[in-house]
Image (cartoon, rainbow, N blue to C red; front, top):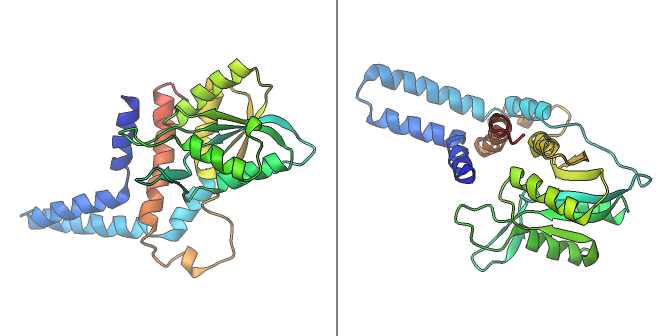
Length: 252
């Protein structure tokens, strides 16, 4: 039930749909006063959610600082969270926008910093069809030179909470030695940290896949409206709301 409700909540957190709903209300409203207020609200939402300076400022504050691990630091395992790949109608796997998680995990392994990789990720769709993401990621890790014996697959989880629950069961059953390296997108790290701490796993954070990085002044990143940010905002809002929903429900 929590999984289904979270999907519905995510739909409601997309600014694009807020604007669409208000436009529909504006279209069918017969009150001139209501239409006036709706038009003002729509303009404000468009300005706010296409403003790159506001988006970059808030996301930069939400993302944790980068972490540097040296070759003298070794850990028995890294925990790679899914959410970077999907399958087509023929069940062929493809990487998505968050593939830096995969790249950084492979780098940590090949540098000898992590000895094993726990790949955590099932099927995140509502109808639960298609192969688990962990299966595709495991195949790709092997293709990138990771020893199959060093990969531990967790393919049941559908969300961050289940990532932590099922990873903890694997860690306990295999008696792996902590601390572990938790690898996920910087935007997702705050929620992941809270959930994995709650689960009792001893780990250090390794954020990657930064959506916002510090750059020199550029008009494109400050005042020129960017319509694509309507989609980017939805991921940021999901993380903020998701963290507090997890805390309210005792999952973080």
